[in-house]
Image (tube, rainbow, N blue to C red):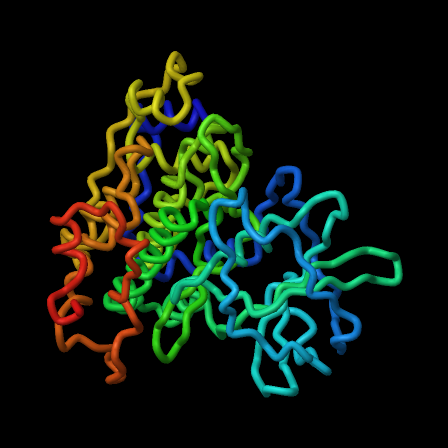
Length: 419
């Protein structure tokens, strides 16, 4: 790492232009889509790939008993699930595994003719499943909905937790790859819609539920291709962060990993999700990842190439143990040079507010929602090009807006959407 940074600082190696031709990013994206980040998991976060095939399960073979009804007893359980029928005589699996070969499978409830997704996770008998505990608390239009859960046992006496989730056909990752394949940029309105809904969901997750997702990336952002409603999914890495309690630092997929995690911080905050959001937004604008590191160390190099060398104070905010470490001095790459000329200043501004070294200086999710970058969404007659209305964007609950400053609320909700 130091050799590369010194080479960049001395001018012998140039800072690559992230805003280059879209066609040059295809091979990199193809490689990344097939690459799997290995995550060290905390105790109680154990997981496993699902079997290649699931055939049929009956209600007599399932148990609806789940682990604790709330995490730390702080939030009430969401009991108003739009569940499948309690009597599920048959739920036949149409596809044995998803396109990436992961544990999620598409299934169909023959009783209701409804498609669902089933996430099958190996359950350690010694621990409660944190993902299930958290998912039972979630109830938001921009968060995937848990319909049902049950346990199943294999012939080897392995216990699996099965999470039955609403089915959403597309992801932001696949949508982005589509535009890359045809050598186009994602429509600017789509970038606005998706980024706004990510921020709105994170505001709910962070402020109302008190949870950090810890794996925001395009693959974990489901999107309805007709309405463009976005839903955050995969809470397998999510956790309630308790001040003073250490957390694992090797978390979050590499391209979207906040610098404090790379520096080995164990007492981080929900600001790591906001960094990831900035990386996702930048990727949608560029058509390729902004920080395409090939390893954890290389990831830090890619960040420094754009943001410049962090100051001593910034390093202290990320991990005080590194304040005496001497980094070669590299100047920040101006944001208007990182992106091409078609990107308006409002977009550059919000990206720069999300991608701050210091976690405390990053936008919160609600601050991001109120940014002028999203003003187009607040227009009274705005709609999707296909003529459909936008998905719900401004129906905030009182809990989502609790303690928000009046000036922020004034910018956040347009007059036509106020009751």
